[in-house]
Figure 1 (spheres, each protein chain N blue to C red):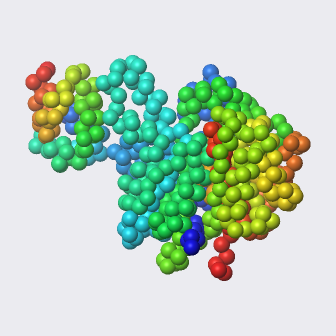
Figure 2 (tube, rainbow over the protein chains, first blue to last red):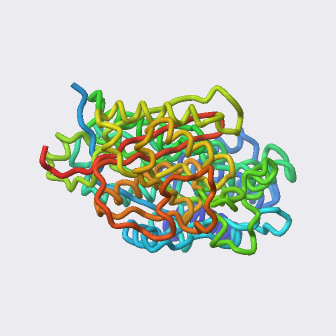
Figure 3 (cartoon, each protein chain N blue to C red):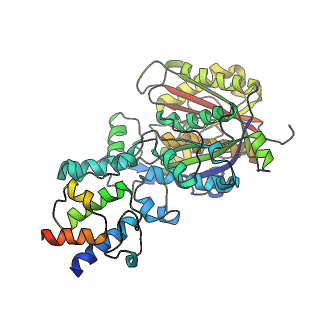
Amino acid sequence: MADTLNRVQRIIVDRLGVDASEVTPEAAVKDDLGADSLDVMDLILELEDEFSMEISDEQAEKINTVGDIVNYIESRS
Amino acid sequence: MAKRVVITGMGVLSPIGNDIPTFWNHLIQGQSGVGPVTQFDASDFSTRIAAEVKDFNPLDYMERKEARKMDRFVQFGVVASQMALKDAGLDIEREDPDRVGVYIGSGIGGLKTWEEQHKIYLKRGPNRVSPFFIPMMIANMAAGQVSISTGAKGPNSAAISACATGTHSIGDATEILRRGDADAMIAGGTEATITPMAFAGFCANKAMTTRNDEPEKASRPFDKERDGFVMGEGAGVLILETLEHAQARGANIIAEVAGYGMSGDAYHLTSPSPDGEGPARAMKRAVEDSGLELEQIGYINAHGTSTPLNEKYETMAIKSAFGEHAYRLAVSSTKSMMGHLLGASGGVEAIATALALKEGILPPTINYEHPDPDCDLDCVPNEARRTSVQAALSNSFGFGGHNATIVLKKYDGAD
């Protein structure tokens, strides 16, 4: 879990230019971390590469917080 | 009554300098910005030299998050625009943003991004292509991003006319100001196509020099031994304002944009029209539009690409447009130093022309060694010349037969 969170945090920090301290499980990717719709699609591509998995468009739409991402990845691995 | 338009700020990223003073000093010193290609492995190409922008780190100017969503040509355009606004002392937050527009084109657009994403597509399939691919690649995006980053909400567009792009952008922006649709325009061109596909394409149509062993001597406009252009990259952006707006805010006026003319060759994909009749019509229209007499034009910043055909026909065009006065004009090509910046060339060359008027120094055509009987005008060979000129042209001609000329006039503040 902690490892997954760290890897997700690293990608989000890199892509969105935010501080790691802001990337908490509760943080909403769009509202708190400033991602727009293109940023989210770009993040999904990066996450798919990082975790060697596919995230469907339906799943992607359900993602709100960093925690949602971590939970989804954990549930698939 | 059409409004008068003046230049109040300039920003440049070029193979010979990433700020106006360095750029100008290198131009009048006759320094070449050409060297071996460093941006990709060019060893398999017949042309292996280019005029690259040196020491450009986008993170010196913008956040990483922004930079990675911009192709290099967009980064150049945004940074040159920031410099130009600063130079002009124009603060859009203190202006009516709806009265400040952007007109910045690119001849080709984000080819670097296109090539990178196409590799991903071939290797990994359509689902791995970046959502930023299209908005990074399209050639109008410098104009879009400059608007986003500066808050300029006025007229916003981009000329896309190959190597005439920068001059069309400045001319079209001037027309917007003349008819009263904006008070100020951020205008110019940007290009960054030192990429394998651009090189492959230009090598295939034999447009580029193969003088790989002597990079600094490869761009030699008007010289009999010229054998093709040297690809450059960069951006040149002007702040254009109506004279009344510039005066009202006490702006420093660099020069006036007095006229604009354009034409089409209706002839060939890549070859200039025989006798240069297309460019001649653009030059004549530009001078007529300025209200100046032909004899008042003292300098032409030539298109001067260093290709065998261009200077032959450009020389004929100048003679056709100016008659006997052609032999009293100075006609230099600053591409001899910075190479051919394609869609950005009209932007950076407008800056060179404005500075030539303001400083009273004409930049030279370097590498002039072998006179060509077809090019018998005064090309300011090899050394800059101190002389006061009242008005000057800047010429740009693009593949497709697009010809664009602007007339710049010295601003003396007297009228």
